[in-house]
Length: 317
Image 1: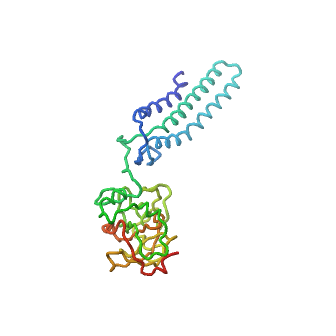
Image 2: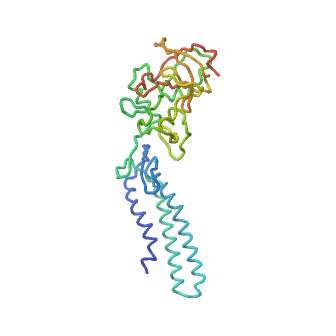
Image 3: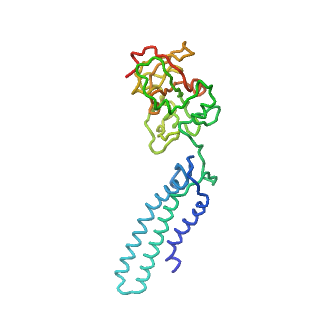
C-alpha cells in the first residue's frame, strides 16, 4: 500500500514540522539554564532550547539511524534477489528512496536546530531556571550574583571575588585583604535556592556516600551532588584538616597557599579568632570561606575584610 511506503518520510516530516516554528523565535542564545522533561529521557538541563533538542535528537538518532540503515541494506538485498520480479524491485527501490529521504530530513533538522536558541519558554513541562552569573548568593530569599550582592554591602566591603581568586598568594605578609564568602551545615532535607539537599551538601562539604554522577547541580558552576544517604548518617562533620568544623571560627582557604592551623583576626573585630582548617575547589588565593554553622548566619561576614595573622610563620606553604 502506498501509505505504508511513505510512512517513514511522513514520520520524520512531522517531527521536523513540529519544531520548525521555533525558528521564528530564534535570537542569540540565552545563558539561563532550561530544565525540560521528555518521556523516557527524564529531566535534562541545557543552556538553550537548541542544545536541549539537539541532545534529544542525538539520543533518537542513535536509535533511528541504525534502523534506517538496516532497512536500506535489507531493501538492497531484496532488490538483488528479486530475480527480475518487477513488483519486488519497485518495492525495494521505494523503501531505499524513502529511507534516504527520512534520514536526510532527520539529519538536516538536527543541524538546523543546532543554530536555534530562544530567550524564554513557558510551554508546559519546561521550567526556566534562574540565570546565574558566576557563583550566586541568596539574601532575604533573593538570588543574586556575587557582584549584585556586593552592591548591598557598605562601600568598604565591596569587591570582585574573581579579582581575589586571581590574586597571588600573600606569602610573607601579615596583614592583607581577603574576600570572604560563607558556608554552613545544611539541615537534613533543606533546600537552598535552586538546589536540593544533596546538592547543598555536595557544595558545602564532603559526601558520606560519595558523589552522584548521574546528575548535576548548578551553583554558578556545575558539580555533582552527594549520593543519597539516609537521615541519621553523619555528614559535614569533618574538615579537610580532619577536625570538626566550628561555627564562626573555622575557615576554608586555598591549601596551595595556606597551612591548616593558621590563625588570624579580622580588623574591627579583634576579639574573634579564626583558624584555617578546611579547603575547597572553589576557594582560590585570597578568597576564603567562613563556616557559619547554620544558614541563618550566612552572609553576616561577607565581602572584603582585612585580616591580621597571629602566627604567620605557621601560615604559608
